[in-house]
Image (cartoon, rainbow, N blue to C red; front, side, top):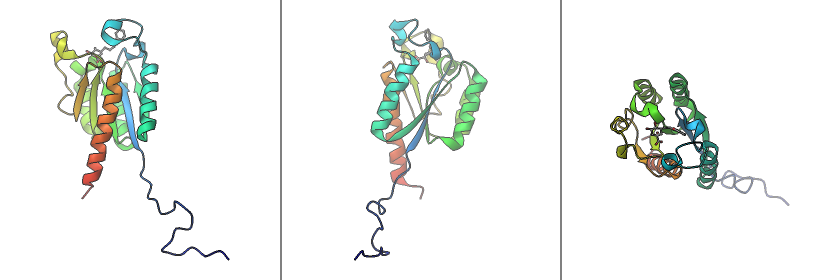
Length: 173
Ligand code: CA2
């Protein structure tokens, strides 16, 4: 005769497992990254943005995170994506591309967004022209990953997830 479920025992196997929500990570790419792989392979590699996204999605699946991607050549659209991420994302990986060096608007939107962010660059801007040595977002992100090509996007994901897990371990108090 079947035993009725009791308060001390789960009704079904696995019912007692507390499932954690997946971390939702938004990847934001700035101007000209839509044509990645088409020119300047010595600087940026031969892989397209679609290739990088596939590799990132595979890493996210292994890590148990969910990822979304956004790219725009327009500063205002990037600002709006960051504003929207305030309630929808747990973390951001952002390559602001040329806007890294110029955009107060993107910096302000990152601050408004308020979620932990990692700045990523395919090249190492510190080894390039003087104007690329300035980042207007470097002090509002958790950290930066530069100079590892497309693999930097995976490194950024892993570093961000580790940061979010440590934040979770500390708990909201
Ligand atoms: O190294 C990076 O990831 C950069 O953010 C790339 C930007 C550059 O302005 C930053 O200083 C560093 C450039 C984006 C991509 O530009 C392309 C140029 C030619 C062909 C394909 C992409």
